[in-house]
Image (tube, rainbow, N blue to C red):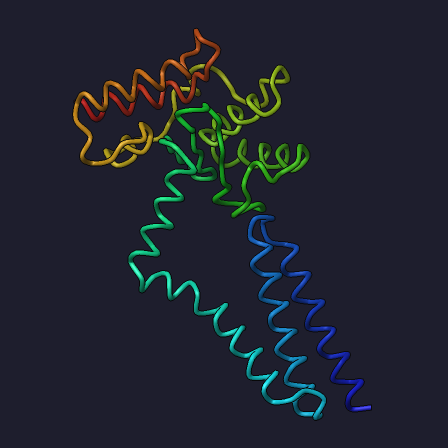
Length: 238
């Protein structure tokens, strides 16, 4: 009977943990599932060892594997060569991009492909990536943005027009609203153009020209993002 109670307690804990994981953004679930799996494995090994069904060497080997899995991120931090290789691989996988942030959304524009990607910063879907959300969820997010953040409405409308071409507009208001209501500082302006502090005046002009070729309304681009790019250039060039 005590063994059955223990098994039921473990099953209940695992069930509650799985329900918690399902509430997380999809791209964060895999790591949590791995953690739960490791936890179940450790409990199982301890139980088998205590009951004499597993040799202590097997238990030690399992503990070694679990420890190695947990220490791997720390090892990468303490070995600059591994960290630099990881950084190079990450840089090679993605090109230069612009970043525009509002209260509710963080949006990235890839300079090469013109693809928009975003992450929710506030509300029911905090931490979710837009590409992981279905149409119903995106519509709910749009309704929330219309109540909380008009800049986010413009950003989300831009994303939806790209993801569902020919079906918009999805919620953007007049051209007056599309100019952006938020003030922009130098750091934000550099992020919008995809530049860093070492950028020269020529870099700023070239980045602005390259982005406007993709975003200018006359070329089928987006009014709001084009206005933010223009605003960034004006701030950086005084």
